[in-house]
Length: 342
Image 1 (cartoon, one colour):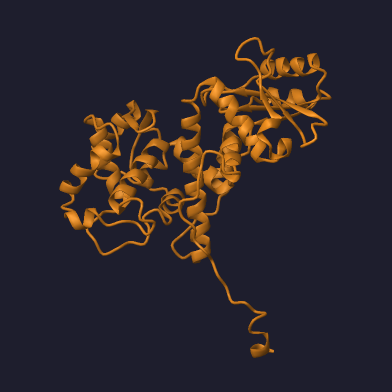
Image 2 (cartoon, rainbow, N blue to C red):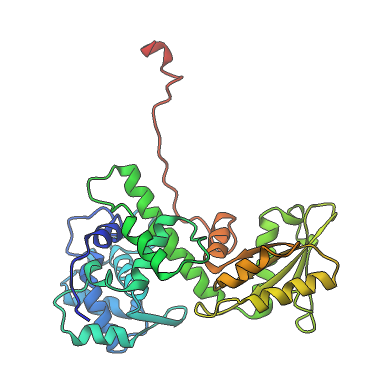
């Protein structure tokens, strides 16, 4: 593979806003940090925090500059840009994260370094399917497209209108929000993979309660026993009065392990055995095309929620996430000035 070929669509889209309002300081942008960060992980750095002292020394960043905070006051500019460099490298498959706050270079990452690149940036990363898929998901919003073959994915990618530096501030914020949202969804899914099966099942019930099932009352959600549950992981009342029950199946699968038709068939069988007609099947991965097609031939009302949609729902309903910073967009109150312009 040849690295470094330009791909303007992804270079411009991925660069939007992440560098923030560039300040007059010696701190490089996040793309400039990609290559040194990847090298540091190749040398054994376990996380971004371990890279910061070396980055400060390499780019001659003095202590005052290194301490400069983002407007949120939670993290320094240098830490933020180094974290985004790491995030983008991971989306392209050059880094992997076995667990939270531990990052390891992959064989693909080592291959890139062996090519002796002068620079790694979004042009480089755009050559990797994982990175392109991530950018596409950030533009699609909730990532709820469950079954997409490679041909469809290519069309979606090539038909996406590129974002450029001439966009309006509102467009820039929307694009940045999409990228932040996509990164948060992936981070949530990585955390969900580390939960125990019982904790994951509890989280799904918490989410359904937050969505309004059971009248928003935790008492209206029930987890089944850890074993011998007959394919049912939880039961939640559809409304506050408990007039109907929704049965839940939760599968904490790796991203490359799709839920198949037999899995869904077994769930339908469990619903039939309980005399139930409604169910929710949730997974951290995805569902096969055959699984989706099978549901069109049964009378049961079953909703399939894949990993990307699950993470989006968690963000939407505030489960496992919190608001760190709020930006307000204000406009002229036309009613207030009606007598002026009338």
